[in-house]
Amino acid sequence: MAESTSTDTSTRPPRGRRRFLWYLAVVLIVLTAVNVFLPDWELVGEDKVAVIRVEGVILDAQTTVGDLKKFSESPSVKAIVLRIDSPGGGVVPSQEIYDAVRRIRAKQSKTIVASMGSVAASGGYYIAVATDRIMANPGTLTGSIGVIMELANVEGLLKKIGVESVVVKSGEHKDLGSPFRQMNEQDRRILQSVMDDVHAQFIEAVAEGRSLKVTDVKLLADGRIFTGRQAKDQKLVDELGNLDDAVKLAAELAGIEGEPKVVEPRRRFSIRELLDSRLLGSFPRFDLQTGVSLKYLMAF
Image (tube, rainbow, N blue to C red; front, side, top):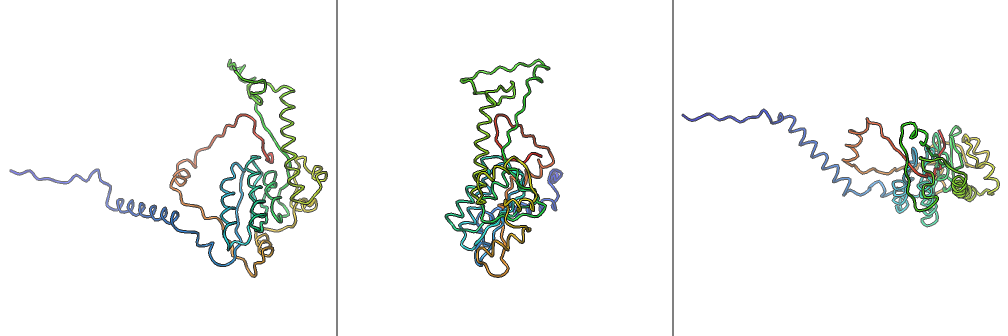
């Protein structure tokens, strides 16, 4: 007698779910293909003003510099507005963006206008002084021309829990800024000399970008902040206005007639970024920074 056979479907997902997964896979493949192979059609045609946003603490310059390069090489983009809403950040990334702006103005002859949001201080202001014109809102917080270095010392804590730090070094100052020992006067003098030099670079950049005397900038470069209106009185910004006003100003300086078309960087679709945002977005991130770090950053 032949045994009857039956297909075990208990481990297979329902037909509706399988269909949904297939649709999802197709959508992801199409999005990936479009982002890889489709050119930036929005950069073709009529004259445009590009808006590049510099937001949050400035930790890396790669994305902003890449956006500046792309728009500077587009014939249809006649002007760029840097929308700055940042308290500053690392010295080097701030300087890299500053250098990129100056290079584009010099070589591509592109008009670049800075538009300040809620805050455009320290490294954010450093970037702004490289542009043709600076526009701030009356209540924008800006200025904070200075450098800060924050070092932790955990020597007392280690003694309390019975842990001893052992350091083997090749030179007297190799552990400069170590959190495991007290800073001596010679260490402090070395670090202060570094700070003074980086501070002088900031002052020189402001003086050159704003057509001011170095001596006049020094009087304002003690880390203090200004509102947009106060900064205008001190000649640190040119005009008061919002982002739309900055776009219109950039279009006018670039000779664009009528209402300018505005474009912004189109971010490539990334499955990895999507997964990171979904899976890790709800978890706090811890950034333990050790050693000497110089920042053009407004303390808050």
